[in-house]
Length: 80
Image 1 (cartoon, rainbow, N blue to C red):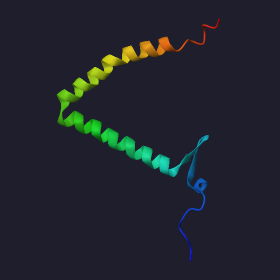
Image 2: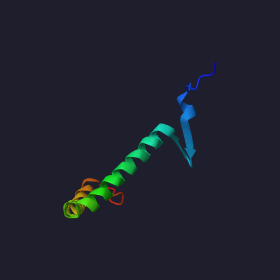
Image 3: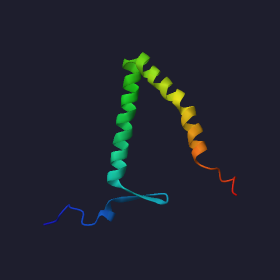
Image 4: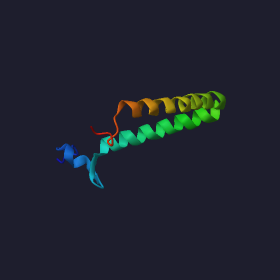
């Protein structure tokens, strides 16, 4: 009797360019991106005022994030 069970996990990998990606990781990532995209679009269509207010709030925080991120990592040009 033949078994459909995969004996070695390396048999479930895809070669994409230089990277080797497992089929499970690729499937979970694809499902996550599709569900997250659906949630964003659905929220924008059903509650446009609240969703735009949330996007504006996130956009207001981005300059602060990038300021502190740049400040916490020394640049590669400033070697002493």
